[in-house]
Amino acid sequence: MIPDFLEAEKFEQVISMLCKRFSSYGFQRIKTPAFERYDLYSKVTSSVNRKEMVKVIDPSGEVFVLRPDVTIPITQELSHLHRKLTSEHRFYYVQEVFRRSSDLAEKTERTQAGIEYFCKRSPEVDAETILLALKTLKDLKFEDIKIEIGHTAFFHEMISQLPLTELQSDRLKAFIQAKNSVEIEALLSTVDADAAMKHAVTQIPMLYGKTEEVLKRAKEVAITSRMQETLSYIEEVYRLLAVHRFEEHVVIDFGLINRMDYYSGIVFQGYVGRFGKPVVMGGRYDRLGDAFGADLPAIGFACEIETLLKASDNQQVFNEQMNV
Image (cartoon, rainbow, N blue to C red; front, top):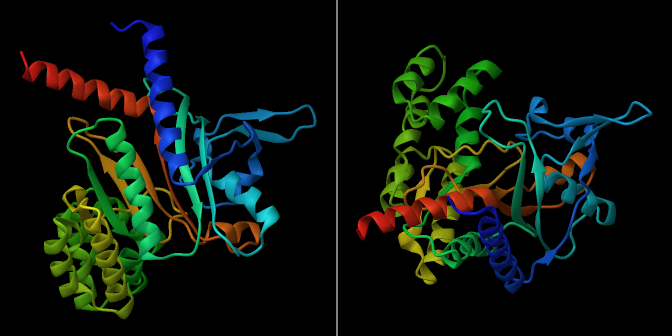
């Protein structure tokens, strides 16, 4: 067992490397309050389950929560200064987030690091952000790095063409995330809609893998102009990553439906060898500022230091076993 002081040293080394990389891209470090009003999260659509929040009631009876998310309060703070984005803003953070989990082995407090890049949407900016995530993982000496890239517009355009109830929509999302083609077909068989669109939805779980192959298959089911525009956008992002010779790390997944409901464009998550969970998650959230009366398009990503350390340990153990 590694002594606690050595774990703490590794923890700080990872944070130092992340800060150095983020700073090299012109991001400035900021902090948000540990306590936020509960209303901040109750009025914004996001993945933060209210049951997971750590709530505190002050003497006046007002409900506060320990910081469950960083993107939302940063967006709110920027909305106080700018009602409309006139220039780009680059921020990064390293701070604790607090969420209760049904898994007793999961800690309530975790250290999260990430970037928030407030800027207008473009393939160049989105590719730069994904490139930063890739370089960050390379800084940490990970092997077999893969970045899965999807786009919310592709799925949402399909859903908008189907007369689904909220329950059916939620179930369909869950089946697509699980790549359960059998259940997708069973659900759609009960829906009175265009056969071509229903067929397109059943193909989503198969739209995963090498970029050229996936885009070719996706073009066959891209029925609407918005879907076609989305494919062109993803193609351009991929082309820009290829210019930097990172194409071997890219996997396209149109079934990637990030649980952060405020994402509204390109989404991505990063994996490393010998670790089955994402170590980086991110995407574009152009409409989050609407909740605060501001037009603040942005893209960002986050990672948990504890998860990065666990993934690193798994990789090291595997390499040691291979060298025995």
